[in-house]
Amino acid sequence: MTLQPKAAVSRLLPPAAPAETPPRLGDLGSGTLELRLAADAADLTAAQALRYRVFYEEMAAKPTPEMLARGHDFDDFDALCDHLLVIDTARGRGADGVIATYRLLRGEIADRHHGFYTAGEYEIACLRAYPGRILELGRSCVDAEYRSRPTMQLLWAGIARYVLHYGIRLMFGCASLHGTDVARLAMPMSYLYHFHLAPPALRPRALPDLRVDMNFMPAERISEKEALAALPPLVKGYLRVGAFIGDGAVVDHQFNTTDVCIIVNTDLITDRYYRHYARNQPGIVDEDLPA
Image (cartoon, rainbow, N blue to C red; front, side, top):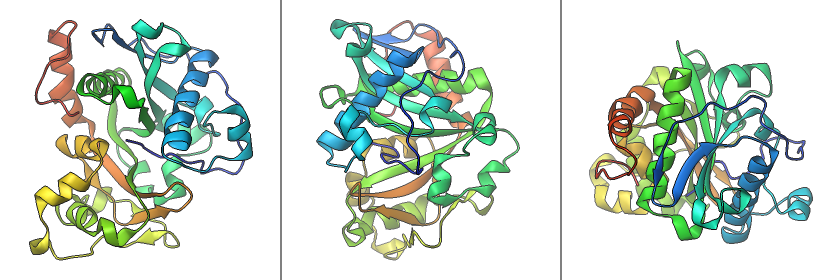
């Protein structure tokens, strides 16, 4: 389960500490799992090392020479973002315990620096013009041993509290389907196009030189069961909270993925999840939560 597992900028920077002191998210945990934001350069390096193991060693993406030498996935955006971490305290509370991560880039930070990662694949002027604070989600990954409901629920809970802390109104990012043979992805891509396409005012469009049409087959030929079975768990989790999809997919041959743009109204996240976590301490048991 990945989001944006590739470098979209030409110049790669070494790991750096987050630009701002991250907010506290409160007490969230499940068993030995705890969630917090990266607090220093060591935390960021741990997240980058996990991303490298998942994206490059497990999923066979092709690292740059700099990434290969370091054994880390990194780019210019890392130093600008907050990094959500899930820690297994049974493995330690420091870098050794990081077993899941999510990268969060707020609109006001993007506007002052490189812009958004997603803009390397999609025209997102409609999102940048949205009348409210926006947040880009990216670089989501979970260690193979921890791809379970409690881990994903912690990540979603952390995002919900982060959204409330900063008053975020809209979230978006590039989500990946495995493989570059779009014909084999015809069913899930057509399903996303016909049943989850964003309204025109919030519909990013893949850049013309990268765009792949997602409308492979008419709606009446689509099997929802088959389409959902072919989608990655992360994409299905977004759909469960009412996510929309941008127009057009982008094929990344280097990373063996086909990307779609996800858009989520944060009211759907905060109403459904934050109230649950605010009243339940400290366990994470809710059958309605996305896994």
